Image (cartoon, rainbow, N blue to C red):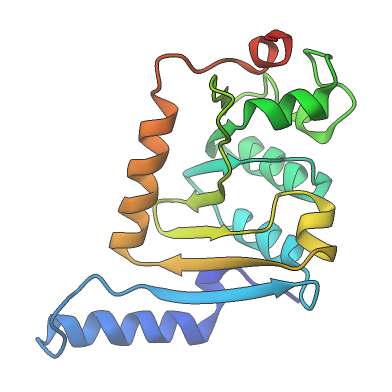
Amino acid sequence: MTMGMRGRMGLGLIFGLAVGMASCGQLAYAQVAALSTEYSPDLNLEQMDVAEIALAHKTLDLAAFSLTDQAIVNALVDRAAHGVAIRIYLDRGELQAECRGDATCARIPLRALIGLKGVEILVKHSKVLMHLKSYCVDSSVVRDGSANFSEQGERNQDNSATFAVGAETVSGFEAKFKAMWFRPDNLTVAQAVETP
């Protein structure tokens, strides 16, 4: 059985202890992050990501170089159905390769998210890679790492996924995501697929 970051007792205890010590003046800084780094193929990162996504109640911001893992897409669809506001930011070149000229992306799992209530998707216009594989759940947990959101990346390749809690980590991700999300030349999925 897999559990999300907030369900991992050891990390929650570490974070709670660090915050408690900081509030008692025993640490010089209060921005302590609890971390858990996991590696595939020894562990199934897909299960960990699905479990963490399932804990979203309000918001989920996801930056994905590739988003082709059916289980991840299903978890996002489920959260959207439960009222979670989801924003997804994608890489243009990778999206074009995955959709193969089909502006509806009918042949890939992403199709289930396009136009879904509560889900917004934008694509970086520039051909300079958007290579993040990260998300933030409810402004409280950040996942980052080398593993793409693909079955190969999550299950079979030598990759990592780091789950972190802490105000500094969250604010860093949120600032980066906001800067990408509000680029004036971002594209819709259809525009990105059709743009040469």
